[in-house]
Structure formats: structure tokens, C-alpha cells
Image 1 (cartoon, helix red, strand yellow):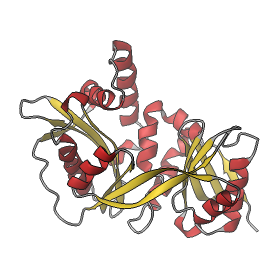
Image 2 (image 1 turned 90 degrees about the vertical axis):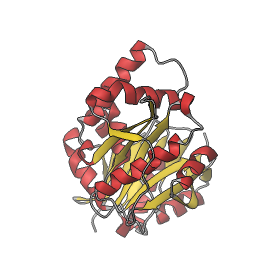
Image 3 (image 1 turned 120 degrees about the vertical axis):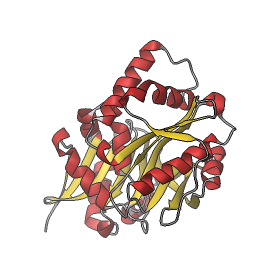
Length: 296
């Protein structure tokens, strides 16, 4: 009987891991860990991204891929053909709860494992509880997508300062110092030259006066597979004017040109403004999903 092994990959293995993760994306399956999630994480560089990954194999076959998105959050995707496999679920469970820190250290931990049916059953039986709800949303790209109604341009490396400033404003809301700008621009360029960006595109949206007001990056998983929006941002001073809806249209059009079957995104259900913006842009909410949480 083939055993399940856990490893931390090398940076040179990232293209292979990305290709496997691409192959697991399907409109009929859950919105689980996507190659775009690895792409966005690669702001930290290829080596750091590899060190944050956990890969489970049956022999040479990659069976599950996890991203440690911080010390206490593992975002996991399992080969859809193995979602009910008890041998795989048992080994991942053992690694997740082990005191060896192969995955988590002691204390609180959160596991995102959408579609990993058997693993979730086992952890819930151990007392892991449901975490905060998320809303997954998807837009079918087999039909035409509306014009965003604003000027949208593909962001290149020369646009790094503008793109990162919008993201900082939307998600941080604190002064963007020169040191912050330098670090973020360097990391953004690291992402653009990284192993996952060849199937991605970053966009900038402008208002009627030519002021950049919105930014996003979209990630294709290859033709006829769901693409991911990660992230999408509207400058804090420009919110409330429909730019979120506009850039969500632009993101869908970009993924459509890249050959994606759908545009997918996940947002905390508590972020009602984001859910409303995506809904207004034709994204259809799915059933709420919850991660699993182990209290410290």
C-alpha cells in the first residue's frame, strides 16, 4: 500500500505545483486554494512561497497542497478524486494536529479546506469548530461581460507605485510612507517576475479626470477553468462611486480574454459592501462556507 508523505518543496518545484493546482480548478467544484493565491503570496519571493507550502504525496503523485498563509492559517486544496480518501485524510489530520510543528505550532489554528470532505469530517469529530463565514462568488464568462464604464489599463512594472498605493489605501488606511512604498513596490515587482504571473494580469481603473482609483489582479488557471480575482481594491477616498463594480467588470473581461470559464472570488460575508459590489457586477453568491478553527 502506498503511504502518504509530507514535504516542504523547493522553489524550483513551484511551476509543477502550480500546474497541478491549475488542474484541480473546476466550475463544478468548490473555490479552494487557487494558483492565484500562490501568486499573490509570491510577493514575498519564490523561496518564501516554497517554504510556506506543504505538499502531501501518494508516492510521486501530488495529492494535496497547502499554503501556510501566516503561522495559524493553512489553506488547503485536495485532488478532487481524493476528497473522500480516508488514508489521505487521516495522514493530513495527523500532520495538522501533531506537536511536531510540521504544519501548525501549539495553540489556535484555522484550516481552510473546501471540498476536503473526509478531512473536515475527521477534524470536526475532534472538536474543531466552524469559523467566520465567507461568501464565494462566481461570474459565468460564457456570455459577454459589460463594459466597465471607466478607462482600464493593464498595469506594467512602471505602474507599480500607483497600483500599490491604491491597494495600500484600500486595505491599510494609514499613511503610505516612503519606506512602505519602496518595500511594497519591490515585492510587487517580485510577484510580477515570479513563477505564477505568466497567467495573470494586473489592471488599473481611472476616473473621468484621469485619476487612478481602482486596482486588481486576476489569475488564470488555464483555458476553460475558473480564474481568480486576488486582490481587488478601490482607493479609500474614492469609494462609494461605483468603481468597485466597474473594476469587477474589468476583472471579468480580463479573465474572459485569458480563456477562463468563470471569474471567482471569495470575501468575508461580513464585508457586505464587497458582496454588494460583486453582486451588482453579475457575480452570483454561492452558499456560505466556513473554515475550521481550533481554539488555543
